[in-house]
Length: 451
Ligand SMILES: C[S@@+](CC[C@H](N)C(=O)[O-])C[C@H]1O[C@@H](n2cnc3c(N)ncnc32)[C@H](O)[C@@H]1O
Image (tube, rainbow, N blue to C red; front, side, top):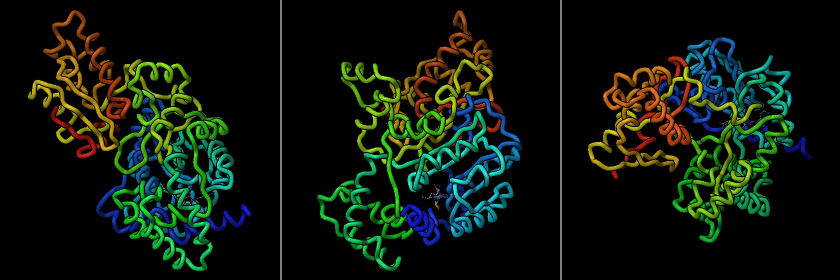
């Protein structure tokens, strides 16, 4: 049974390589899957201190048509770092290989094979693994993650995405409906597509999938792209995870969640979905929630949100202890995301208006910014090159800080305040070296909203 399903999963991605990509588009744009920004992985997984060199190896497991491999390879090529693209489907590898060729990328190796055999196929331990949208299709996801963990260096980081239980419900509901109508067993792909397309177009208003897609944009996308239709609604096998189950999956492979992150192609992070503080205004309820261990808080946050569609997270053996902090003064703060005109534009707008302004990203994360002189001054010193020590040293020549009894101490205090609010959304991160000059996600993703 499970062998038949394995074959059916493989056949789906032979027939419909995912996601559907046209290699010719490499000439006009680079797709940047949010989890694969080296600056972000470095901050959350390597305390901001990773040195990227020719020995750096990434594995993209179940790499499909290559989005993650291409983006990693583009970032790694200047350091001499390399990527292994491991994928069972020859058709998917064909697309990924052609994309890499169009970009002139020589640092990706393509391996056709199964994740279960990763330790034998990958040729030695790797620093980073991406495995997105894959484990939940496997017969034994735990065996899959264990095989990946066996290829990971002791300080390695894995960026994992699996479907999440509650937000997946409308899709699971549709899959039950399809199964009861025998749609997946229809004798040809054309027939499966025709039946599925007709059904998604003619659902009653009460149907949860129709509800979840109130503006019809998902249905339109499914009708336009057969690869999306089959990946979302007709895959032969899938499962989904609650937060506790996701932690259990990680722990089963000897890994811990270092941090939840984002997945959609917009650069942001979902980390705030997993914080009870994002939802609970009632102090009594918040105090109850905060009295629980962090993993339970995240489980409560998932129940409060009620509609998280997938979990994407960095896993490592050290977990959250692997995140960068201001205590390493040699690290360089930089604005990972910035609005049009740079992050300083937010404080300038607040100063001009003599009142606070809002900054918001496309993931719904938002903050109020006041023109507080020491914070504005420190924000102005963050240039992606100065280290924390440099910023403290520079404080004695900055008008807003120099007259304080301890300019360096005031600069550090202001930086701590800034870091506490901006780091939770990955707007401000820490790293080392020229590689992470600010900003990495610029422009329309982050907006300044006048107060
Ligand atoms: C939904 S696609 C995701 C592709 C890619 N990771 C992305 O995020 O764009 C899942 C991919 O995993 C591959 N896959 C599934 N199970 C696998 C296994 N056991 N070994 C290798 N590849 C597998 C499929 O062939 C398919 O290309």
